Image 1 (cartoon, rainbow, N blue to C red):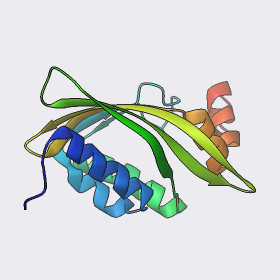
Image 2 (tube, rainbow, N blue to C red; image 1 turned 60 degrees about the vertical axis):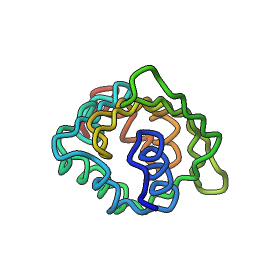
Image 3 (cartoon, one colour; image 1 turned 90 degrees about the horizontal axis):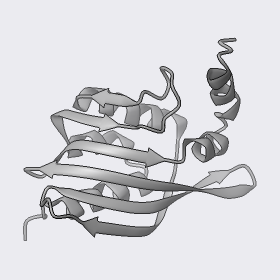
Image 4 (cartoon, one colour; image 1 turned 60 degrees about the horizontal axis):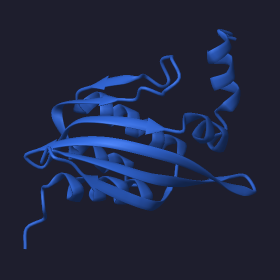
Length: 148
């Protein structure tokens, strides 16, 4: 039986790939001209609020791969919408950090067309993710305007 190309199924493949650390495969779920919005991302080059195109998204995932990030994905709730191309997913990332596991809340709005993500709005808890990945000092410096 062929794999479903609906938005729920595509989100499930995306979240499964993240949980399995298959960062190098994830960009293939996006259309060539996809746009990923991250409205809550801190300003700066390391966390752009808008990524345009599959290759920019691929580069972002490659950064996660280089860091060796592993996120557990749990508490997933997917909401169908009146628009057949759109789903809204709520979920938590569990992120190993030193001697504890931190939990970051997420909401993602995906628009899927012809089996590919064409647009996404990702509302991640960037502060917790930065804390878990050791990026909190850089995030604090970026937010305070300290470039050193």
